[in-house]
Image (cartoon, rainbow, N blue to C red; front, side, top):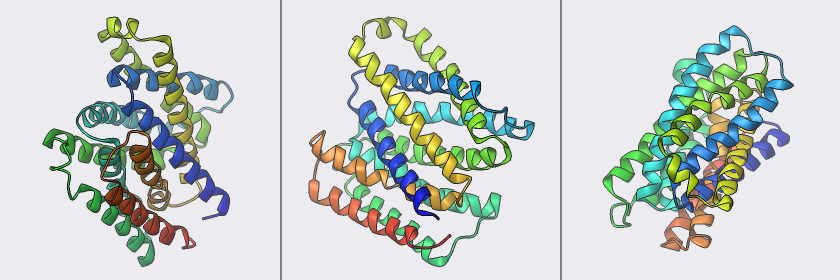
Amino acid sequence: MSLSIFLIVVFAAFLHALWNAIVKGAGDRTIVLGLVAAGHVIPGFALLAFSAAPSSAAIPYIVASTVIHWGYYALLSIAYRTGDLSIVYPIARGLSPVLIAVGALIWVGEELPLVVWLGVFAVSAGILLLARGVFTSGISRAGLVAAVGVAVVIASYSIVDGVGVRVSGSPTGYIGWLFVSELFVVVFVFTSRWERLQNMSGRAIAIGLFGGVVSGAAYGLVLYAKTQAPLGVVSALRETSVIFAALMGVFWFSEGPRRDRLLAALIVGLGIATIAGVNV
């Protein structure tokens, strides 16, 4: 993996943690998630205007990814309603590298060196440290199940999009159609909760849309990186976002206990450093 791809993925990880913190701090998270989806649609149209159309081989992947993302938004909303950012986010993001690496091995045939597998499992070890006190930390069983469900959904769309963007022949065109297809989420959320949207302040709406633009930029950068490096490696490196989220949870939302969460972030960081040090 080149230095430029490494830096792109780490920057995307920071952006991803940032938009999740925005959603966590929102008053009406369902509406904000709808605004986040709207923040994807707007730049999506811009990408389509300046990109070649993806090949027909990419269409099934765009459709599958769109449907999977609906489940992602629904589960993410439930998870953040019931748990801390620095608990829910690491479980959701931290379990996904192992699932993606295994999925990429089975369905795409991507084989990783042993040391990379060790780094991936180090990421999971950090997650287990955070999850150790999950029932005493106040998160409900529903929140825990939702967080694990989010991890499964993340792995699913990561593999689908990782393959789809490669066969598309036009990465920016693929990303554009992927973002525009989230218009279905926007319509559903806004039409079913129109009064709640009208009661939101202009500032809250602007923050939600900003979160969408940040989220879109993060995912677009990761999809580009997946055209240059193995899916499992990019996805694991992306989980530096766990470190950013743990720090945001502790210092932004005053979540605790600090020591366990910062130690878990350190272990995740060591796993990612191991992965990053391997030429794959």
